[in-house]
Length: 315
Picture 1 (cartoon, rainbow, N blue to C red):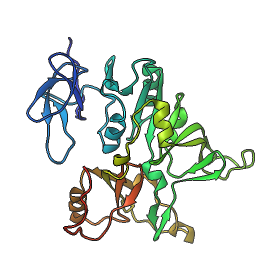
Picture 2 (picture 1 turned 180 degrees about the vertical axis):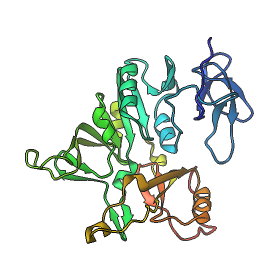
Picture 3 (picture 1 turned 120 degrees about the vertical axis):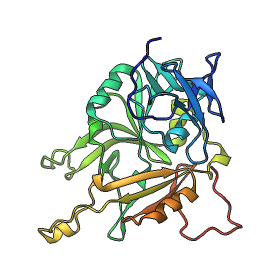
Picture 4 (picture 1 turned 90 degrees about the vertical axis):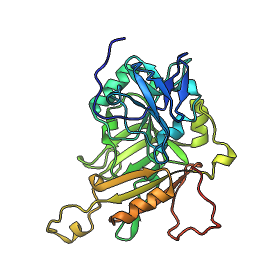
């Protein structure tokens, strides 16, 4: 098989191929082969990063791959092993059902309009699932939580700091809100035109329908969340805003201008210990330490130190 040039970045591979070409998960001190390029991969089984495979030479062979988060892992584990990281041509589909060949593309990182069009043309039958867990969680500002997504009328939600690029999507777009999923029927940007025809004030809007996460899992034919998984901790999230470059306010309104999306940052951790160790090293403005649970909820991490009798979060 011809070798493909690999880009510099190295995203983890969670399922490799054994000598019989069966998919296998990483375990300590093992070798296997990448399901896409067939090059050797080594298991990486440390205490910080999720166990995965890494190419022996170079980076990831799929230029569409993005750094995996606990959110990616959670959704992939809803699907049978044979549906995960399926090789399609020169790419790995996050989830691909074998009978109707529908691809569920999990999107956490920023993406360009050209990349959206390219992936839709390549996969054909596909849907987008965006990571919107934090949209239901207010961003601290001036001591008060600022909402990011709220319903303004039946079937319409206003989206603060939106991903406008998904106006270019021609396939269905779903937004994972944690305990629910929003199915978009269309986006509307009225920032640069007078309100009146739509009756909406300036802003970015999502028209659609919200369903429970359980209903979406059933519709997508993915595994439901078991009762014992509901209260388990899936991961930890740190979110903060960087201090923008100081500039002289021109009016009183500038003093209360919302933080720009470019100033928002997020990082995820496997354990609370790693989260707190990272947070203690450098103070950050409006830092939120959050726990993401198996029921989809995102809740504040208890600020008090843990006592010996406290229950440890599930990894």
